[in-house]
Length: 295
Figure 1 (cartoon, rainbow, N blue to C red):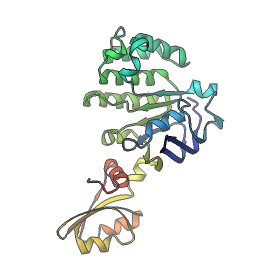
Figure 2: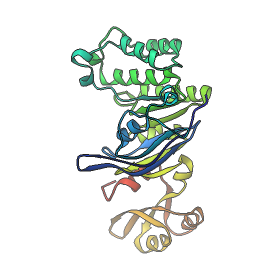
Figure 3: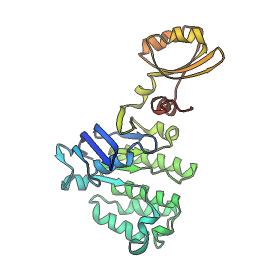
């Protein structure tokens, strides 16, 4: 699939007096699976909506292959934004059935794969005659996943697709995503709060905190920059010289710190009389975005 480059520059967005996105720059390159992670209220859904032209911005620009996403037919054809469904949005006159929702998607997305959609309907055991407002949260997530995958859009964006799914269905979703990616090499951008489970599928991770991009880095490369060091306080303090200390926990003379640094300095720490252990993506995220909260 020939996906373009999706790019945001100087993006700002506020709701009343609350700044949600601040001078944000982001580039989404073709043929990768990106993970977007951030705390509740960090601005993830707002960012995704603006990137896809579904939300307005206050300032800055969003382009797809150099052209603004607004009123851009190629962007409309190429980008699928499958956001989390909410029953309240499908009540009253908008209370459509699953089959009508998917028929609308088939009209909207030029690469819609009907056979694939039918296979997923069968696998997910979704009743097409049911109204969306009658679906459970997990079933609504299945509909958003089906829409995203069957769209075959070169750039496919999913907002919290695993919300409400049990562990078996979450694992199946990750399998489907990887199978699709291996066949199509399309670009995926997935926001999630289930960091540890999804970490293995992300080629690159974007960390959003308080409306700012902290990281847009290959996942393995990012994790290699962090270590957890624990031991006697004076030895830990000595070892941590020249390293960026992100969090500190102390109990008596024992001290545990999360640090970031160059590989050479991290390797040197392992020679000292301290315990040095790698950090998971979830622990890296907490260290960067915890702001002193308990970990």
